[in-house]
Image 1 (cartoon, helix red, strand yellow):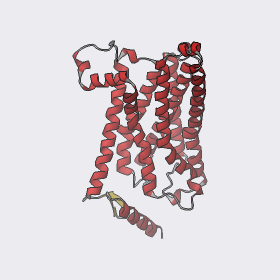
Image 2 (image 1 turned 135 degrees about the horizontal axis):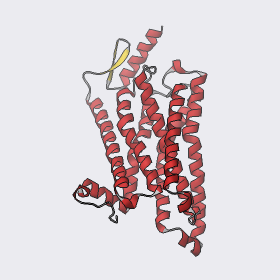
Image 3 (image 1 turned 120 degrees about the horizontal axis):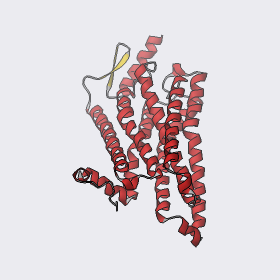
Image 4 (image 1 turned 180 degrees about the horizontal axis):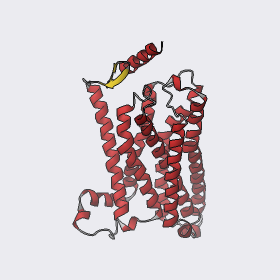
Length: 325
């Protein structure tokens, strides 16, 4: 009976995914990929390359140009490292195992993929939390900002983000995290893991960030009506806050559907289908590609840095101390 159900599940997956075929009760990548399969993997490959190149530009810019060595940009650097690792580690694993992760959920490689996936996602949102705290002090307490959020404090916060993210990622995978595609994995431990994991890694930080940015918004509105306060918060700081709020908003927009599905799947009459899980998973992963484009759109100095890096100008002279316009 179990073998029949596995075969039926395998055939069902094979029927709806153009890149896999059943072989000895397991799924293997087809030896004769269709045009649809080739197109899907070309798009995902392009997504991975774009994510890597875009975030690599941000990392090089922040490291190379002295003018960008600020606590806020260190948080952006950490966020870009997480997004870069998503492109390097998570994308290839997901492209290879996105369909077979259910049948091979005990496989060591699949568990490693899940740990990277969860840890890097958690790291991203914790770095966004740090950015929101940084923006809070910059806008709401500008006179004490430089003393409270200095380089040493920023680096300590970044280190804590990565340590906590690694602990959460390893913890919820060991606890039995499931994307909801395997009926045999439905147990109390899995349900608890699927609830506590997203709550700790996503919902709680998202609520904290939202509250902080609402507070910043109300304070900024008061400052606009006060000449004295407006002078204490530079136009550049307000623009940085607006830009990073957009980054957070895009992050929540792309992440929320997946985490909503994971948390509330025990309430569904039927488990979410594999195409739904795949689509939501790739939606969350594609967020890692967007941040460099947001920075380039809002910041002239990031665009200038990108142009100098892409053109190779930085290799023909010392421009580390140049002013970016």
